[in-house]
Image 1 (cartoon, rainbow, N blue to C red):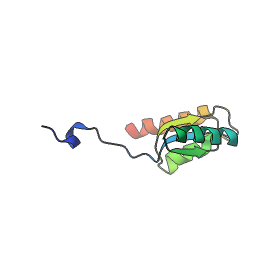
Image 2: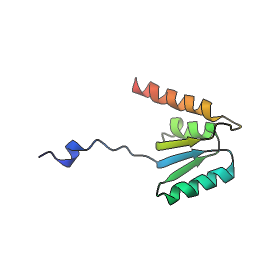
Image 3: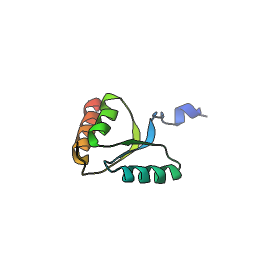
Length: 92
């Protein structure tokens, strides 16, 4: 029989299950409470630039990123492009 380590894929270490990105403090708090009630860990960022820095510069990793589209410093679309570009570059 195969050993468990040979049949299970390697696990990835995440800093938290979910990163919530929003410039509205009420939305951040509400999302954090709802996600924690479901049993998941949460980290928060207040704009897209902070989220990009957390992932690209600090090497943080998440299972899911929930991001507002319209934020003052850097919007969700731009932050998503930068994060995706980072992962595409790291694959090549």
